[in-house]
Length: 307
Figure (cartoon, rainbow, N blue to C red):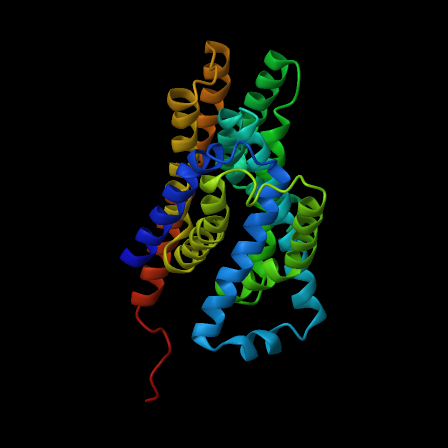
């Protein structure tokens, strides 16, 4: 349990501080940053797999069309999420990217209803309605949908949905995902270099150091998150996950000085209230189920003994 909590905190702290890292790469186009994240993550994971001597197990595990299809889908969802996030941060929308990860849990609930035919409990309808009202309010205020936040929430919640049914552990899964994306990413970086627009090696020593580090910065929190998801209750993980967007919001306001009007505060407050209700409802339901399971295990046997 303690290991799981520390893993979750490590993952969310890293993601919360990620805007600082990305802002240091503001000279590099978003698409190149994402391709570097893919390439260096792949190489980092290859080193881990070689050190653990688990390549044969990995190769055997993907000899299934269903398994391969799942990880192709998760790979492209992850790439789309990274692309939108990197672009959003470096385009000066850190506050809106934080909104995406605030509403991500609500999107997961909606996807469960739409795709998995799950039924919402009575108190789950309240936060879903409130969050919808908050997004509509922000849309009317800005005159446009907060599409960066919506794309981030949709891609990451879909990624989580498919990972839920994925059969392999986090290390194998992430290795397959980066393997799927490696060749197109590496080929694109080579093309940029031949055209003279490649950033690596042509934009100063800081960029040359930070881009290779993207492999570690990308892979480690994802592995920590997967470890946490298997080790602690989802209700606790759901509470801890707000650490990341809260840090991003604070960075956007205090460090990057992005505008945040009272109208935005009102819209965000509706969504924050919805998340508080969703979290309390999920925690209460989990405690209730735990109590029922404990009572069931302690109940005396009702089978009659033979006379």
